[in-house]
Length: 523
Image (cartoon, rainbow, N blue to C red; front, side):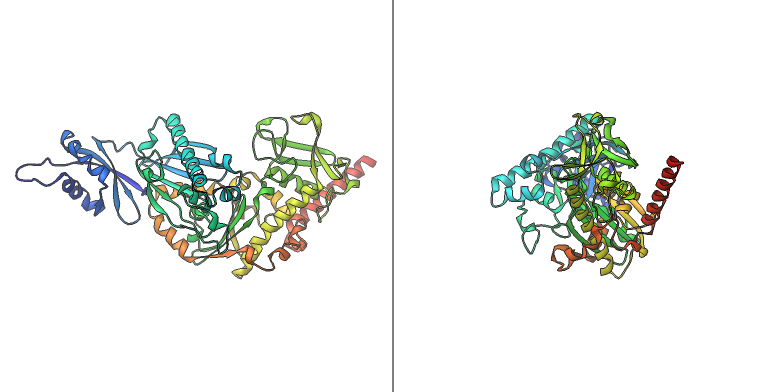
């Protein structure tokens, strides 16, 4: 393990008439053999006296690697090498997660999450971009909201662990390009307007004080590749080792946008497009984010619907994984056809409501407000359009590199949505390609994992530069026939069913079971 920061206990000789070297020189000479030239900031230089003299030269130094040289981050009296911590952060547009990591053992000591305070100024990044456009005071509000969120999380970690988090020498932070811009106090409007060039893509290392953080050490901000290919995705690429793999791997982060990276140790191709609101339940009438009361699992057998609800509460609505399950079950049960159309003759649970057909997936006695929960025909159409975009992104990427799904060694799905979804359900509706389950890996918060990976292995800094250099970026919005290419992918699982032999097999099995149950009931 080679963390970004190192601690060393030193015993320095005291000055004498025969050896009147400065405290600065004594310190540099003691570190030179292992660390080479070390940068000593003025703030630390000012602490050398009287600390060196009163401690009789017995000091612990904390150094942080900034990619080029070591920098002195802290001086402490005596041997404090057992106390060595760092912070890993995923700066999301909706929520922010921070981990306190023991840099001696590599273990996560504590973890805290909270909503990004920027949500009070805009529920999505586009709203915030326009809120800050040409308005320095609004931009400062957004910057301060991000800083306050991070400082509050550090406070929570201090309370939870008993560790004074403000003394940490290193923080690694990964966020999308917009979030990084706002944290730096940079206007995000250029990211929205052609040619979509960021103001800054590689901010690198900054002091906690420069960012307004209550942190003594340095902060490394993961770089961005493009407007919609931010540091959170580069962090995910590091976490999944795609750039080290000899085989083709796909990395798909499903959130507000869908970001996709395909490649191996020889090349990387990346692209991004709108994907997430429907996938996260955002545009479904009874949709909601994953939380207490959200339906996360659905099983249908005839007229019997079995729900799994987060928190074991009464149902309030569907989150993303519940939507995928419900769609898959409706299709396999023959209640919805390949076009996504509900078939009234197939189930007594199909009703007419608000001028359209809907499927009643929860009865009043199962819900929090005592009213049935419905999944509308328009909900289905909205979701299938979104899943078609996600599938077409992957398909287009593979065509661009001359590969097929058969060439894919691993398909990583990141984001909260990918963490809880049933792979078989995602394959059934055509959201995922028809890959063997062992080839699909749900990696959860890969942005946070990549931040922790770098925090514990400074050698990955060089790899990040290599990733940026060999990554080619596609703007899906600039592809003339992209929308047309989505048409076939709107079908369930796809208009070309030969691409989904597993799903067709599951469909036949379900039909055989239904036939057997009908025969048993009649005879």
